[in-house]
Length: 130
Image (cartoon, rainbow, N blue to C red; front, top):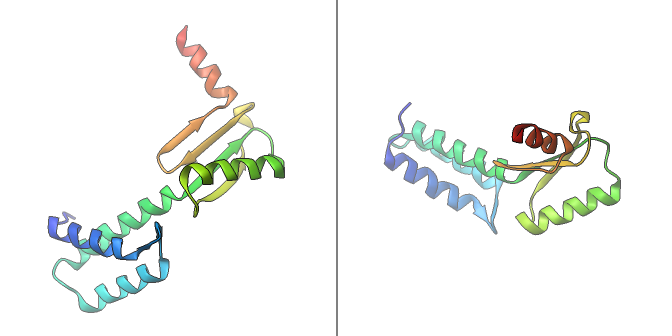
């Protein structure tokens, strides 16, 4: 479905009205969706589609996945949590996972940002240099 420029502008304006203090207010977003569905303005399907895309991107930007070869201690998890909150601000949802294929180190993915400090990444870089 092709979305008109006006629908994109309207969706961005609605999205901005849902953001309070740099964080998305989920209740406000739900109210806006209900209002748009009830009023059915011109191009409302495009507005809702682009609005959904903006919300999805914001949620991805606010979620972090930290992978390690072995389970991290509570102290190390708190340290990583503090550093990520300092860099990306509060409101970040952090999940910790174990990935034995990393051999050691950490891989952090926040939205489209990936920080790979794992042994596996270093070995791959070394293999590529030969």
